[in-house]
Amino acid sequence: MATCCTSLPLGLLVLSLLCVATADVRVRGLRGYGLNGDAKSDPDPYVKVFCGYAFGGQTESIDENPNPTWHAAFSFPDGRPGDVLKLEVWERDKMYDDHLGTCTTTVQSGSHKISCSLARGRIEFHYELFSCLDSV
Image (cartoon, rainbow, N blue to C red):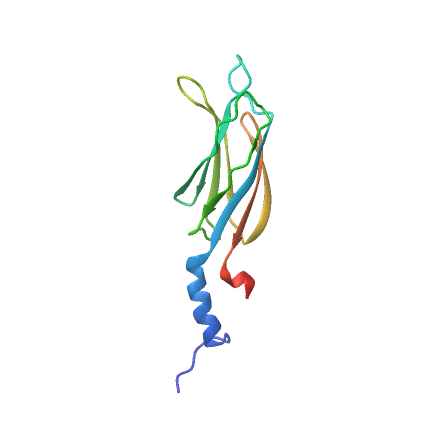
């Protein structure tokens, strides 16, 4: 009879190995505060969202609003604890978009509210990382 070198029941060990591939990072509730671009008018900001090496997409640009709320949500089905979650805040311009700042955080299990100071304002958002083991 073979024995395993862990105290976990074999079924739970197999489930935990399968669950590694089903972790999911979700980003939502993006809000900007005091964002400023060029001196001519209020900014038209948007956010690009990355997790690890994956680009999750970007929000819509909100016209002339230094304190925007974006209703977009982003999902990274291959996200893992330790991945870097990166949000880049940009201002849309006719010629070249202006980079207002970048927020980075290291992904951890559970649900988190993040607030970051940027070069030109501040951004807040929520993210969560859950796997199938969180429901076991």
